Amino acid sequence: MGSAACATLGRFPQRAADAAVMTIPPLPPDDRIRALAADVLGREEYARWRAAPVRGFFDLLIAIERWLDIVRAWLAVVADTQPVLYSALLVALLLVGVGLLVHIAYAVHRALGAASRGVRPMAEETAPPAWLNEAEGLARAGRSLEAAHRVHLAVLTLLLEERGLRLDRAEPNRVLRRRLTAARLGDAERRELLRLLDRLETRWFRDRADDPGLYEAWRTLYARVAALT
Image 1: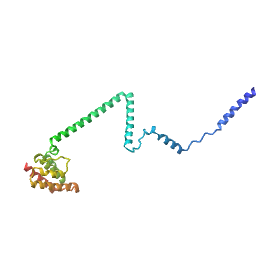
Image 2 (image 1 turned 120 degrees about the vertical axis):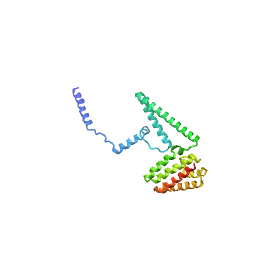
Image 3 (image 1 turned 60 degrees about the vertical axis):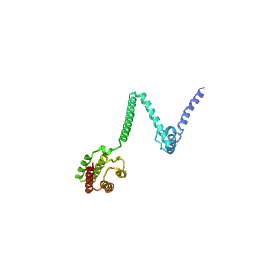
Image 4 (image 1 turned 30 degrees about the vertical axis):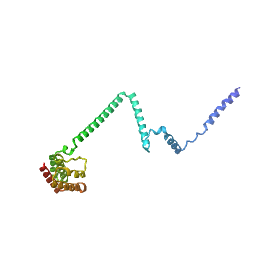
């Protein structure tokens, strides 16, 4: 009995020794670990947490839907944990929405009102004396090309107000040339205006060189048009 117990107890140190000499399995190489990590992170459940390249319109819609899901989930968390912040966000969004609606309504109202009056923005924005005052200051500073452009605007303002010309600011000079035929303007003044328009366009869009003679010619034309009113 005693010898058997001693023999049994003697086996445990041997098992401990056998366990001590067991070798740990070697770790896989780094390349294999990186490949495994890339494979795991590339699965669908992880794709939503990073910006995936958009390959088409439907992919864009899916990306927007996922982003909205994230925003909704965040708002739900904020509503549960910070109700004051959530209420403030709702009020801010409401004010932004109301402001956009008011701005759109105002812009539509202005556009419809201008159309019903027959749009003449150039005549309404600045009167001829203001253009001429600017032109004189520019001419004194040696910027005769810009001064000529201001007098050109003053001439157009006179035509819009007094001589039956209709022109919108967004319309180019080729439209102006066509509508000058219907304006109540003498033939000599009409020909001079067309000639000065050509000279001004050449200077303005090519070399932008100052031309005091061009400025004086526009001043002379303005005086002639003003004398017709």
